[in-house]
Length: 78
Image (cartoon, rainbow, N blue to C red):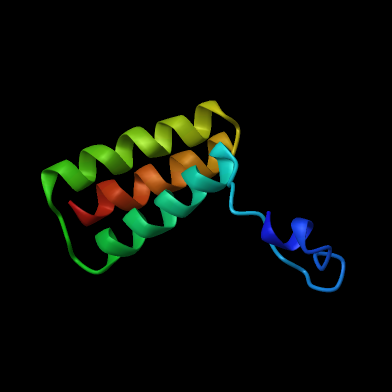
């Protein structure tokens, strides 16, 4: 916004601060996945990860095959 007012946004590649819902879901997925891979097995974290995984599948951000692979990995760790 400041770049536009000063007419310098053309000189610099200033990224927008707004992220799409898809980007937010992906970011949260990678954050939760990293926490789980690091050994954090908090029940609330697992619940959030499961809900997020289902949202990503329903929004077609991941394929059904990728969804099943993640579930298989989770089941093998139990």
